[in-house]
Image (cartoon, rainbow, N blue to C red):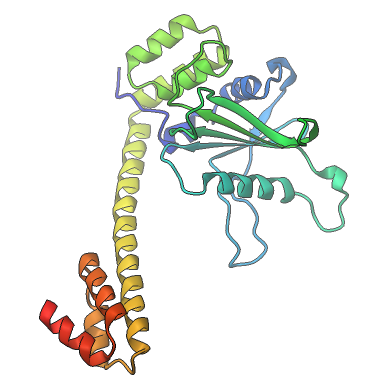
Amino acid sequence: MGRFVSLRFDFSFKHLFQNEEVRKYFLSDVLGIPVEKIRSVRLVNTFLWRQYRRQKQGILDVLMELDDGSRVNVELQIKALSYWDKRSVFYLSKLFTENLLVGQDYRRLKRCVCISILGFNLDDSPSYHRVYRLRNETGEEFTDLLEIQVIELNKALSGRDRMDDWITLFNAETEEDLKMLEAKTKNPGILEAIKEVRLMGLGRVLKAVYDDHMKQIRDQNARDDYVRAEGKAEGKAEAILELLEELGPVPSEMREKICGITDLEDLKKLLKLAAKANSLEEFENNYEKQT
């Protein structure tokens, strides 16, 4: 058996849903639709519309469309993300409105569902598969056109939810995990998905692409870390100069020195000096003492 390719990586996750049988059974289990009523589930463009150049572009992981025009966005988010809830609503809203053109009737709007598979816990509740819709204060449903489903991978399974086997699959780390799941499941979609995972592990070309993809992620993370640090340094330097400018014109030599500092701790110290200084001369004297 070749190398095991985890489904907790976006590349292998997206590759899994290239298989239509996997798509059908997954959506059947998540949405509670009998699989025989799902004739087809096609993949569609994952880039959401934007009207203006400066408007934020939405890019989805896996976007599917059912026979009735309903659209389902399946997102994998392993690391905790700030404002994850707002991001989900943003994507769902764009997905809901993007196909309605000017002058078209609102009846053309179709049901949209966002399925978020999370590698972190939203809260301490034992519930790991939740469905959110628009309801009033008494629980009466306003519409089923917008729906968010949350599946949390790190919580203990109850053994009673239809998503248990899928969560076990997404959490699988070894061939032994796959064998155990294969032995106990009766879900044809899970069995088909296990085949896909094994094919991913055996395919030399796919593994090469997968390894290159992971290298790109690591390189990008390193670049992002550098850019974030550089951005923080620039922000602190600007804050120091803004404080000093309140005391008078900042000499170009002093400005260049401050902008040339990249160490965040040094910049924090200078920010405190600038906040306390009553004149540029006082700041400059304290700055020379510190350096």
